[in-house]
Image 1: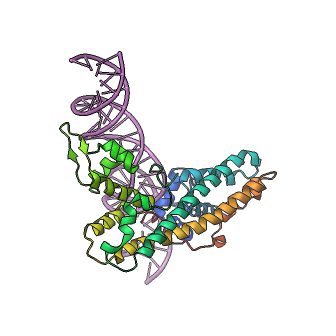
Image 2: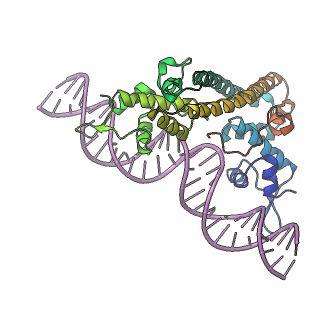
Image 3: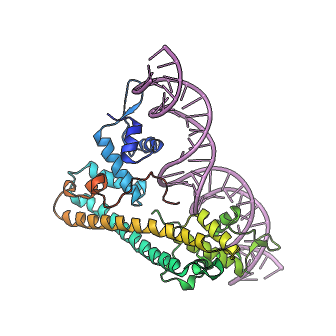
Amino acid sequence: MLTIGKLGASAGVKVPTIRYYEQIGLLPEAERSSGNQRLYGQKALERLAFIRHARDLGFTLEAIRDLLSLSDNPDQPCAAADAIAKAQLLEVESRLARLTALKGELERMIVQCAGGRIADCRVIEILGDHSLCATDHRHPRGDETS
Amino acid sequence: MLTIGKLGASAGVKVPTIRYYEQIGLLPEAERSSGNQRLYGQKALERLAFIRHARDLGFTLEAIRDLLSLSDNPDQPCAAADAIAKAQLLEVESRLARLTALKGELERMIVQCAGGRIADCRVIEILGDHSLCATDHRHPRGDETS
DNA sequence: TCTAATGTCTCTAGTAACTATAGCTTCAAG
DNA sequence: CTTGAAGCTATAGTTACTAGAGACATTAGA
């Protein structure tokens, strides 16, 4: 059995974050020791690693909740889960497209900032001037985690 | 002179966000009309477009504050701006690699779901198993905006 | 010119996904 | 058997906004 600290170290998640995940119901309530300390087994470690990796890939906790509900009922017919999986795929593809555009912009910025002074460097200019953009990112803000 | 609404529409930034940027000092306090409404000129539009664009590329407001202060004193070497952009690029490339892998898994899951069960899908396994990770992301969490 | 609709004002509170602090208890090593 | 690290709960703070309330300003149409 792992204490919360060992669990966090193993999964690469901070201790308060684990307690937070329990609080919001992403992790089940942990078993407790005689002294009221949380104890975790292998299953909890796997679940936490899953969450950690999915967060790392930019999924929201809500999306992760959906993915976990898939893994929690693996005997469900796939028809029921198909919509969730497809929604995730759409999200991933959109995220990929935006990241790819972003990468191009950053590369262009770095090439043009070839060791001069800021006055001669176009990084600032590129960020200020929409017409220099290779890609269209005029969609409204506030959607990077969605 | 632009009202806050026109400014927001031109730059692709919502009105409350502009007021928020003023509040935290990213935008200077705006001139006011006789009726106390904010009025903006071309300089404000450029500055806001800069901020919008940089946010779109994933820079934090702190990084943007730095970039703005660089652009306000353009007589230094641009290594600082370059370093900020390069750090962003590294992060973006790492995310791209991992997302691409996940996209493949999600696509395969949907194909496999044609007749099977969730238990046969490897998405959960991929996200749960650290050894299947293509890249190393063992760094502590909570740094995606830095 | 009056009026209705829309835009703007301030202020407060809420969101996601944590992170930090305070003040206490429990556990493990020397 | 003590002492220092690690754990507990609970609350408040963080970033980058977003939403709502209630009041004032501006503008287009009758």
